[in-house]
Amino acid sequence: MNSLPTMAPHVSSLVVISGEPIGDPSTRRAPRWSVPKGASSTSLRRRGIAADQIIPLTHGRA
Image (cartoon, rainbow, N blue to C red; front, top):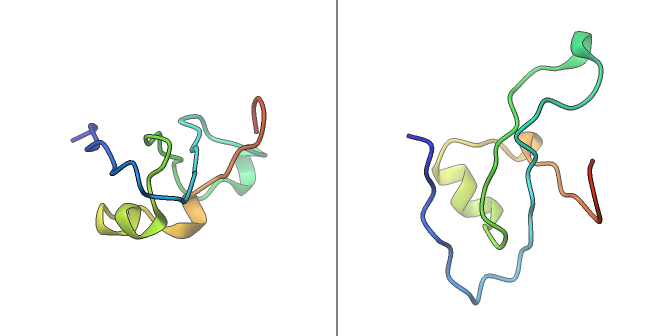
């Protein structure tokens, strides 16, 4: 199940998660996930996505 529901517009937590593995291959431990902007960490945890898998991005790429 890859699709995520659209999050409520009032959610203030802006998190963008890369769908590509980041970092050195020998240190990668878990996949990264793509989610809608505005998804909160609580809603992600409900979907089984751990907080340490969340990569907040600023401008551009991680």
